[in-house]
Amino acid sequence: MEKTLGRVLIGKYSELPDRLGKTFFVRDEEIALFKLVNGDVRAIENRCPHKGGVLAEGMVSGDHVFCPMHDWKINVCDGQVQAPDHGCVRTYQVEVEEDLVYIII
Ligand code: FES
Image (tube, rainbow, N blue to C red; front, side, top):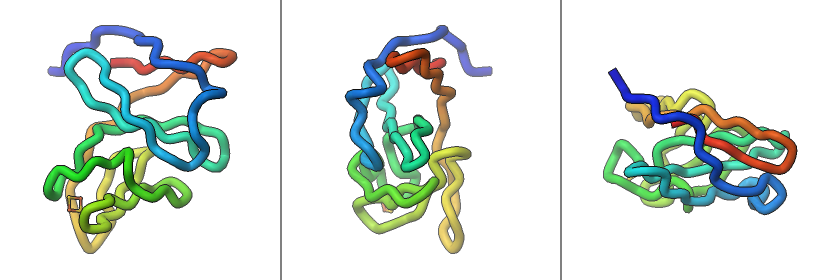
């Protein structure tokens, strides 16, 4: 079972770039945070399950990020790699309160 440590403040919503990833380090985890075109914020593990590409540096399109190394397409909402590739990354719950963004980890 994964240990839940609680809610961690990571920054201001107004300072997140639109449709770009940003890397955060929370405890021992490296997390890619994305503000989507609809304003939702999603957080996933920052390493591609293929060969470890840094997902925060990938192109964002809709609910997906394209790994910058070999273009695997990963859903930032459920962490699933899209066919024809396969695998998944961990997802993290995000909470936004007024202008503050929290990760539940
Ligand atoms: S490392 Fe991400 S697609 Fe290869």
